[in-house]
View 1: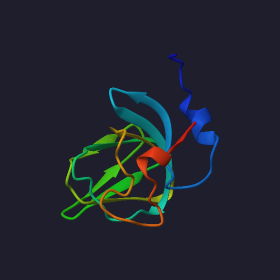
View 2: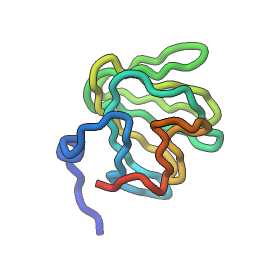
View 3: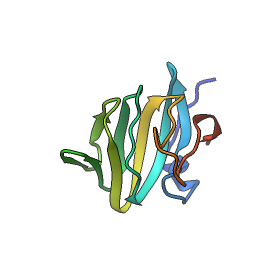
View 4: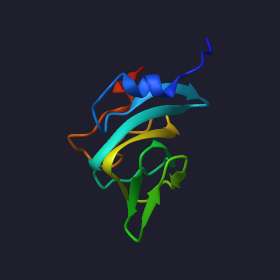
Length: 122
């Protein structure tokens, strides 16, 4: 059953950083919200593109050859196979769009790793 989703309410329901939560699903893609603070881990997704949309704050997507800074209301798509590391100096709220099978740390096993099937739906 389709229902509207209030992103502010969803984001207010948790406090941890770097733990994406599923808030929707369409066409085999998950819509996720996540809070960023500090630096993530360098990783890549061999078969999936990944879209980062900033809802609140500012983030950086570090690539090996440049850094992309995103402000509120801006998004960036990291193409499949491109190594990247998200970061935020201050707490930021981000929406992610990616295939449902996407592992959050891609090719890297890390303390932040959450298998796609283990993501919490809120």
